[in-house]
Length: 305
Image (cartoon, rainbow, N blue to C red; front, side, top):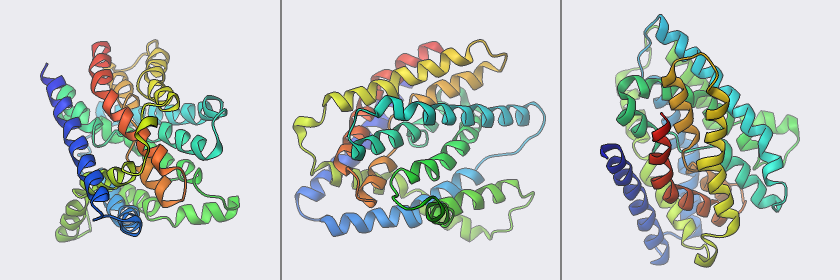
């Protein structure tokens, strides 16, 4: 009951921030230009700081823990490959502008804002560290194959653009800082990164709310949104759980993989859709509805762990 209460409290906080974004848009405080500026701020400054912070916040003990970390990296990588292979067959009947959003929404789950608190509540500090390892392949995929869903350039140009993207640079910088025995970055710099990282949730939710304010409410629970939510929250995590069950490994790793694949759509789904001229309103609906429904589905899946 404690975990469920914490989950509900966290979700209500996210919805409150979204509601503020809706109100700001309806009252005219955020217009189209303002929303674009907020999206650019998120993509170019705040999210890179969030990525760097996620790589530099854990400890690096040795022995069995390091072996489990490596195994978690392999499991997460395999899950990313699986979702990449399943994406097109699952969403090929949808229009291209929605298909790209749906595919990205499957790649990018909200395993940070929702996943980390759940891992901490259920498994303590060890669960948080394994969850951070799970996020490394996910972050790399969402800013490479995921980001390429919103670009329409040649493969050569796309690769050049991707490796220069602030979030991709942040992935490699975060990896370098994580692997270095001593952190060469002054403390005040990392404190500044941490401060900007704390802006991620409120700013991203405000942007989502401002996008959702322009979405027609009658299509909020449309069949396509419910279809995605069923895949994201139940079908895909149960598939992953079934594939992992016969594997001889630490049960904690299996549990974390199950719960992290059951997270709702990540907020960057609507942010990137808005930034790159895709169906931002549809993307915001995916985030909103999947987050709402996850209040019920995540506690249900915890019965398996």
